[in-house]
Length: 218
Image 1 (cartoon, rainbow, N blue to C red):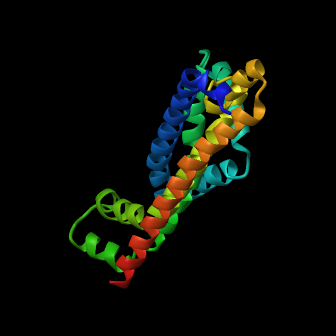
Image 2 (spheres, rainbow, N blue to C red):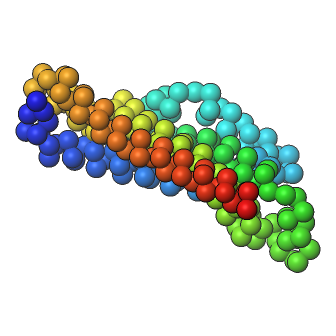
Image 3 (tube, one colour):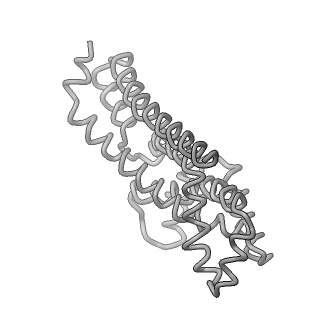
């Protein structure tokens, strides 16, 4: 039934590897940048707050596919150097996904009691140390279910990198289908693979949510 898939499994695997690499880099980079931007969203410095808010609101209100497209075609004009599709897509994903991770972290930061921060300040800790040792670790733990959910969305969105010619998993399927003309087999296989990974991720998110509930109740 899946002969078109098995005959081209190596080609599929190479495309899926690119998808995984793009997703992992986009998620890790997005989480790191998002944790910093989230601090900006609760900053008392008006310039920092408004700058970060503008950054987040702009990115959250335009399609990811446009961010990928613009970065790939406009950055070479600005820098004078061409960029590879993979590098362009990676940076675009980090920049775009960081705006969503930032809002998740902001919610996590705001859930932390202010007296905990005040106590840390009274011990002589700097704001940087408080962010590093208190705010970010606690927010990360509390918002882990939401972070995993957003990571699943990021994994699904990797297919949009086709717009700049990156041969990720879905693009690989399209190439094979143009040769084999077995759309149901090929895209059915792609759907199954995405379902397995995303369903597994949703179960992980549900587990972390259950752990957090038990922690709050204890």
